[in-house]
Amino acid sequence: MTTPLSPSAHAGIDSTRRQQIFPSLTAEQFAVMERYGERRMFPAGSILFEQGQRHIPMFVIFDGQIEITRQSALEARVIGVHSAGMFTGEAATLAGRAAVATGCALTDCDLLVIEEDALRTLVITEAELSETIMRAYILRRVAYIQDQSGGVILIGSQRAPETLQLREFMARNGQPAAYFDIHEHDTTADMMARFDITVDDVPAVVTPQGAILRRPSIRDLADATGISPDSLHGRQFDVVVVGAGPGGLAAAVYAASEGLPVAVLDAKAPGGQAGTSSKIENYFGFPTGISGQALAGRGLSQARKFGAEVAVPVEVVDVVCQGDELGYDIGLDNGERLHARAIVIATGARYRKPELPELARYEGRGVYYNASYMEATFCTSEEIVVVGGGNSAGQAAVFLSRYAKQVHIVVRADGLAASMSHYLIQRIEAAANITLHRQTRVAALHGESHLESLCLERRDAPMQTLPVRHLFLFLGAEPNTSWLGDCLALDPKQFVLTGDALPPGAWPLDRSPHYLETSRPGIFAVGDVRSGSVKRVAAAVGEGAAAVQSLHQVLIN
Image 1 (cartoon, rainbow, N blue to C red):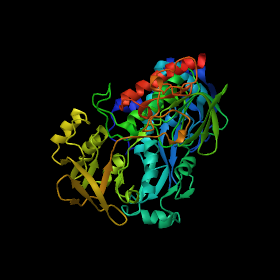
Image 2 (cartoon, helix red, strand yellow):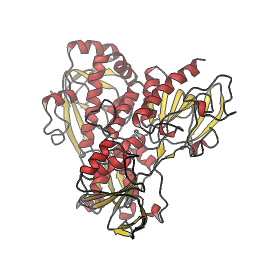
Image 3 (cartoon, rainbow, N blue to C red):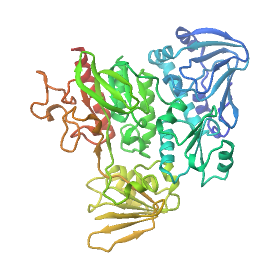
Image 4 (tube, one colour):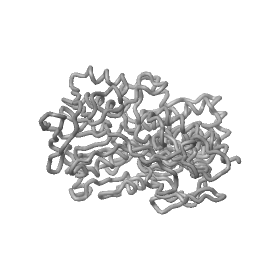
């Protein structure tokens, strides 16, 4: 039998879900798995893997018990015991990332050891076992995230944008972390005294091994917690995908499933702008809707299942556009360089910032560009303002209305019909605590260290001041293309031009460019970053798949 990872985290889980998290393998499944590993004996007390260790194998138990322990800098706690018929691991195992727990042989153990590469071959080759393993790995990671009693400790202030950035990074990358706020939690002062952390050190991170990071960067945090990839310097890939949004992940899944060596590079987290959506309800195949983060997590698991290297946080800073026989040379923000025979640009777009005096001063201090569960907790029983008339704004308003006392939607247009899906308009109209302000804009922000109020300006009406501490901005789209320099042909708004839209003389070869191919042969653009694209998740996914079919033709010629 297997002891649940945490009684509190698994309270109320039915037997079917528990069996999915901790499946028992059949004799036939054992026989199949033996082809991929080596059977070994381990005496009681053997440490099989340690928390924070990378590239650990899967252990399949023929006989014996493995105790799983999770530690923070405060304590180590036994969270489960795997017995005969079970296997170890979770989502990080398949990706070669840091283990979030320690495994120790509780008794003498007869184990099948399946190394990382062999495990990846197994989940690609054996369909039935793949489903069992992948489901268990994903659900175990979810359980670790929900159980915050072990792992990384983050001490910060919800009033500080630096804290918000670190929390968002951990949450969007599916990393377990316990958060203590210096203003909201009574136990934080004792925690700070214990680790000699002052207010000036906040935000601070305490790793499970007891290392203290004071005001760390995103990369510092990723390196210390095992999220960062191994060195990519000098590596050669058939395909490098820049951006891990829906289009980029789709390209990675299709390219890797075709056996191409693939790397996906993203500066923040899988999912892109869509990954911050509380719920996407008009995506094909999900009648009850799916959150952007859940959709991104599934895409990430698929890409890694097929062997793609998904590297976060890794920002591309330049591309040497004079391709040679090796392809293109790509520079990263940490000074490393890698090579790609083909590139898929999927860097998406970011929300446009309105021209408001002192806007930057309030970013992360009451002004936000996405509406996740974390931001929602800030808004409980408060008045908030959402600016924007597109689907992202509508989804945010509906989601936040479950927490806020009153939601004000501000649009310059005469209404929402021209820019928002009908089902969202119906939800907004039905919500008693959502008010639509037409022909209106936010004219000014006020507050000392945090947003305290704002002014709304409507055509032919006096200025209105609202006591609002939280403002959410979802305005238009600006492409993330500044890193390209003058490498590719862009339209006047800086979106990437492709295919027949390329200007005369921009294409250098005798053959015609493929539909999604840019002005540089072998470089493709998909999703929101592409000029003329349909700004929808499904469209980006389709373009990611289509780009792989085209780049296949480029690579074999």
